[in-house]
Image 1 (cartoon, rainbow, N blue to C red):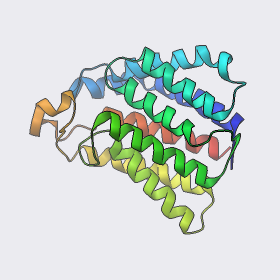
Image 2 (tube, rainbow, N blue to C red; image 1 turned 90 degrees about the vertical axis):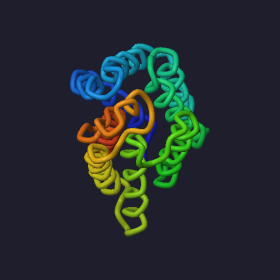
Image 3 (tube, rainbow, N blue to C red; image 1 turned 30 degrees about the vertical axis):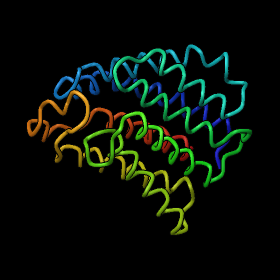
Image 4 (cartoon, rainbow, N blue to C red; image 1 turned 90 degrees about the horizontal axis):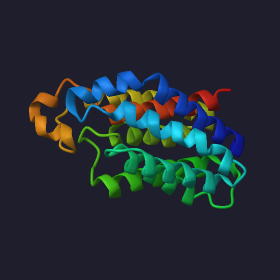
Length: 209
């Protein structure tokens, strides 16, 4: 079970992580992309935090929708629309709920994936953020089915997200600017998959409080 307060804490913590890892994410993107992923994500989440007082009293669905809309309007490149769509789609499945069940949390990640796929026209295995969020969700579902608590499932989900990041080093990028490199993209980890793994790290730290 997650509360609205925990969702807000998660948003703040994810923003902190985007600031903390801004240079790392930018360096990763300079190797295979436009070189601005860390800068963009840090700026976008900073804008979210600045706007948070205007919507933190709203319901969880409206909070997530507002986060998504802020990211779409403030983040350049592909990451703004992709992350923005993910947050907006996640909000749609928890309309009217301020206490989120295990199934609600699974549904949110599931809809986030649907949003990312529809916006990015990508599938798993193309060296994108899907290569960390999809294995993470698969692991969370498997852990819940095996009887784990949602807190323990998210811990295992975060590990699966980082395993997905490692996997991106072994595959050719076929989407976005990185696809221009072809086989030269092998050996580099995907910055979008990395920022997504930090999102799961934030979720884990909130879940384990």
